[in-house]
Image (cartoon, rainbow, N blue to C red):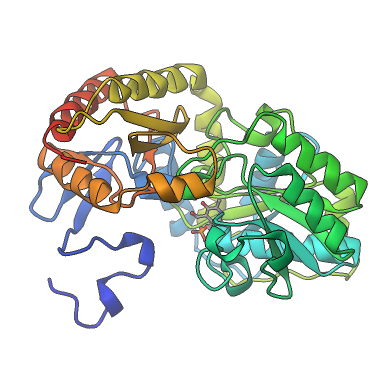
Amino acid sequence: MAATHLVGGISSAGRSLPGEAFSVQRAAGPYLWDTDNRRYIDTALGFGGTILGHAPPTVIEAAQRALRDGPLPAFAHRSEEAAAAALAAHAGALTRVVFTNSGSEAVHLACRIARACTGRSRVVKMAAGYDGWYDDQAFGNAGSMEAHPAANHRPDNGSMVLARFNDLADAEAVFAERTDIAGIIVEPMMANAGCIMPAPGYLEHLQTLARRHGALLIADEVLMGFRLHAGLTSHRLGLDPDLATVGKAIGSGMAVAAVLGRLDVMRVLEDGRANRAGTYSGNPVACAAVNATLAELDQQDYPALLARGDALRSRFAACHTGSAVEIETSGYGTVFTIWPGARPTNYTEALAFAQPTFSLELHHAMRARGVIVMPQCFGRVYMSFSHGPEEIDALAAAFQAAVAVLPS
Ligand code: PLP
């Protein structure tokens, strides 16, 4: 049905697909079906909204039970503490939890907590990093690197200031320039800017720098949390953040995210220095989904999944486009970006290497072969536990055939 009343035909700009209508009927495991009932292997996975695959049965059943018992009491309910305890059990020293409805909201709250905790006003955010779409987080639009060409013209919207990812000197300069830095928010990998990996030692340096200046380190793990193991990616990388935001994978597609923090940090929410609210925050359906998802993740073989993802990346990287351009990928086993030609190490390179036309054409060529890849040039291929060897083979075969017909 053509969209007349729904603005632009979509509720989130991330769902835009230039030039055509593509509409999903249902999704299960590694597959989704369009409204003509054509089946595809899905690697967009609800923007990484699930690592178990679409609609994992035990999660859906738990959510259905919670729905039947009433989706919205105006009081504490029995699965809320259980879900918080389950998350905390996977988060080391970050033993205190607040649930929110989206990652954007979780980032908003984490920054508020950092400000309340330090009595300072600004949070450092990485240029081109996506930490949600609220005005201050998004810097108007995407917090782009072009807006941060030199240290003497640092973008600053009054609540956040930008620093360049993978640039140690720039991070130090922010602290030299300002004394009101409450925290640094950073992803363990710049996923939304094309899976730019942290340079060796970079994240550790940010942590040391934050500590030295009495600021908090906030790991934005809305996308990367529970993707490398059943826990925080920062912990896997040897970091010790003061706060972390998680979302997507913890709810298997249900609208839920959370802020995790140390007891001494989260105390600001109990002693009146900061507040949190939300009609739907920590609702029973969301909490049931978190409980069931984490129980499933504890049973999963992460090393095997990462190995499958790495194997797929190698098979992609063995392909060439129709004009003999090599394929590169950047990222981790279950989240990576496809690049025609070269892999970027920072956002300036990512902008230079990005080819929007290639990415859109790849999307179409793959879709014609029964596979969904995100159409954006900084899009990610997501792998889930439901993508088995059969799907990996089909993905690799479709990719080889698809890129061969692309000029790049
Ligand atoms: N932070 C990161 C790293 C994200 O990837 C996203 C969403 O993609 C968000 C925050 C915002 O989360 P949400 O879309 O749930 O508001």
